[in-house]
Every structure is written in structure tokens, then in C-alpha cells.
Image 1 (cartoon, rainbow, N blue to C red):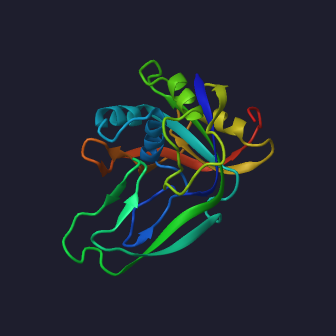
Image 2: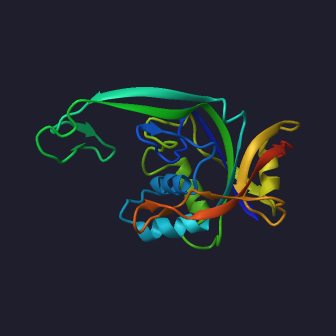
Length: 233
């Protein structure tokens, strides 16, 4: 069984959770919907390709492990913005976009608290089920090395310091794949899709209904500390 070994390193990263008022909170691990969006962006897909996004999300099986404690390596960025009805901002589409509205729209200062992981060092193992459908893992691996568009980890300000795809891993179990990317003798916090050997699991909501654009849908995952064997690094 083949897995992609991906490496995420960045000064700032955001694994978005449920937004509460002006607080953009984060989770310890990336959502399945975020991983789907990242891969789709590398492939050059557009938001209109809803069926393709939905199909890709359903095929993704992944696990992630932090080099350090994800709960402590965090920061909060306090932001203010003075926005008017005619104000516009540049977008990744290459032209300025604005907000439609009447006189006085967004008048006054807006406050925002954006949460981030700082100095992110995280490894991920990923496979597609089934593997033979397009896009294949080989297609994605090539796209992650030479992406169609700039990639970011969560918010657009969260740029990686290197490419994501590192190499292939051959193993039948997701836990073995994760242990292989942890330095030998080290124990790290990890979360992974439920496997046959799982003893305990918990339900999380981290998917998106790409047809409606709404977030929802639960899946079972395992979380715990894994000992590293350092086989694949």
C-alpha cells in the first residue's frame, strides 16, 4: 500500500475551526476539507468544480503528526481595518475585488483576532481510496512539486517554506507510516483516519458539502502520541 509523505513547514499556519464572532480559531490538525482545498489548488481547480472537490474529499485518507506540542506553539494576531463601501482589495485572481453595498457599507473600524500555529513543523501521510481514479496520487505528487497556483496552509498569509511532497512510503497501516516519519526515539502528538488496528476513536466534523458550500459531516479519527522509528526521514 502506497502513501505520500508530505512535509508542512511554515512560520505561520492556520487549521481553521468554528469561527466565533470576530475570533478565527484553529484546531490542532488540518481538516479534511482544508486538505481537499489545498490539493485542488495545486491541481489548478476552480470553485465551480464542485463534483470534483466532493469526489476528491471522499477519497482522501490521511494522518498528521506534529514535531512539537500543537497546543503551545500558537499566537493570536490582532487586526483592525477601516473599510468603506467603495474599498477594494487585491485577490489571487489578479484583479481587485470589493464588497457590494449601499452608502456606508463597512463604515468604521473592524476588529479581528486571527489565531495561528507558529513555527509549524508537521508531517502528513496521505493516500487515495480508490487509487486508480483521476486525479491519481502520482498526478497530485507532481502538482505539489509544481503547483498550478501558489499554495498556502490555511489562510493566504500562511506560506510554506518548502515543497510539500517528499517521497513515497510503502506500508499497509497508517500508524506504521506515521511512526516512520517521526524521528527515532521521539514521541509526538498525532491524529489519523481510523484504521483496522484502532482501539479507540472519536467523531469530528471537518468536512465540507461542496455542492452547497456548507461545512458539515462527521468521520471517525484516532488521536494519541506515537513513538517514532525514523525509517522514512
